[in-house]
Length: 214
Ligand code: DX5
Ligand code: ZN
Image (cartoon, rainbow, N blue to C red; front, top):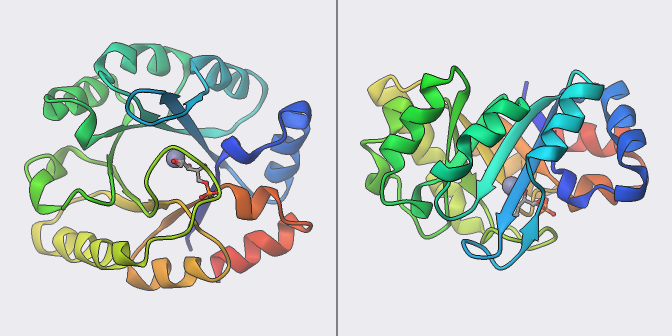
């Protein structure tokens, strides 16, 4: 069974609390939180405060995706706020190994994200540390972009590498996930699907969640 992690980037901020509660009554337990610094990606969004709000008012599992330069400087802020999964980009620091260790030492699940142009070969040394491998299926920074088919091979390769070397990460995909692209991601090996615009803008969330899972 795959996990659908709604990306709150596409939530309606006016109705934020209500939307979270409604998703949870439909069986959602994990929310994907995008953090952007306008340097690593050309957009700005969300801080640790939103994680605090979610942890204080719900039982949500917070899957935090840091799209920021120097993620080391923010790791403790998000851990103290209650992040359950903390994902940094391999491209965002010259010391990704150290940053992943910092997360691991705090007992928080370690996430590593790869831009579409980053190969698995280039992060091989990091993979033993990783609990969740996030394969970006768009260029990071914005919701509502088109899925990059070219990333399907990377998903399959991540699965094959896990089998070959006994890595323990789960495979997450993020960007352009909808009723059509979800099934090819699942077939390739994805286990956690982030969905922003498709899910939040759908007129029937229950139906959309089912379609994503099939
Ligand atoms: C994009 C973000 C995604 C975004 C996905 O850089 O990392 O989490 O919210 O949005 P959709 O599902 O609309 O592509
Ligand atoms: Zn994301």
